[in-house]
Image (cartoon, helix red, strand yellow):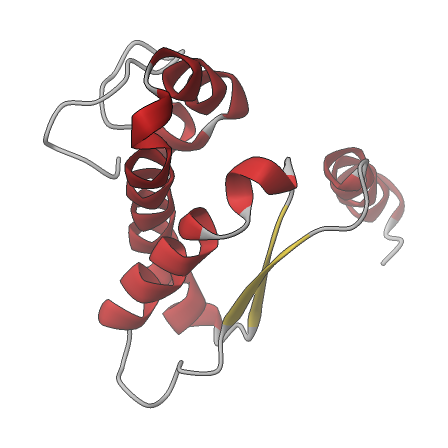
Length: 125
């Protein structure tokens, strides 16, 4: 949950889930309905992502977050807002070098799922 202030309804039926805030079909639909609000919509979604991953970054001491999705949505305002939110919610000076970037691989999600299966079932790392 990344919001208690309303928001889109998730597939699970709840309101405030990260998936509901940052999924491509919802963002595309909202941008089509209100093209003048593109920057605000993407910044809000990016902020929600930054809120959600800040404790993960801090716990695992990550240095890079890779995002998969269309560059026209996730580059620019989205990544800038996610970075700002992340830095506001992690230890100052420690996580200043954490970067977000877009994946250059279209099938990164499928590859990640395959690695999970290979690792769990066959012990392949």
